[in-house]
Image (tube, rainbow, N blue to C red; front, side, top):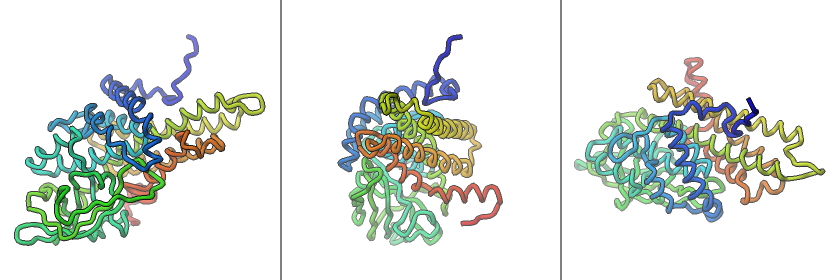
Length: 390
């Protein structure tokens, strides 16, 4: 048989493992990224603005709440959702973060822990992109110890009175609804706080050097009064509910960062093939080829982890420790690919004309949010030893 070069972004032909529906999802999202996101994302990154005009397009493709069934949601499987995250983050981490928060951190808890009235009111509008959500868990004093939550919800005259603050909240400045977690006398519960509620403010965080195309803000709750029906009735007392939401979102991250790494390698392969030094292209140098091979190794290993994790998720056997290992490994691999790609671009690597510096800066956030690398390492360590070292 004649030699057929492998797809450099899929050296182990993982595409052949996908169902037809999954391939179609990847192709359609990939086209959207190429046509609607890549032409505009550099400008939004530079100007520190979220490309809100893409939201209707994301909704029309069924990408908002795509893993949920009913209420106008697509009901796709875990692998399809992962591929959505991968393609979107190939465009920019901010876009994948928007979809991840909308889907896994807002729509998922409303679907899983909300009342039928809450689901009927919010999920169809969120699937259409007409309502945007955010997830309020992390607080100013730190995000790795949610059990030490300072935000309080107290009963008063049949209502709930909320006071507190949340920090580093994706979508907060543009959100119509916030899923806020607060400490009650009985333990942590989830609440839905609507835009316009007195005492509810969501100022944007300025001067970020990462996720600049994301709308990131704080949540301030000052004597916010909520009726009983705004509590998520299925959010059992404690951290199980919010942590389950994070598990859903972290799963998507394990796929998403692969897309960022692929974008960096793809651009670098083109650059090293055409950039000539000492009479030959950079790609003809052994040192360059070794570094390209290292990038491919990291990406391929991450792809295999994500695919296996997706199969476990679809089988209903995925564990938080498995998600922690994949999030830890894949984020570390992606940021190393982005940094090395930036370096191989030489002086051009610090220019926004090329993607790796943007992806590297974004991944500095992704490797930290929804569980820092250290937290995920300790989660795996706890699984191995049975001892909680937190």
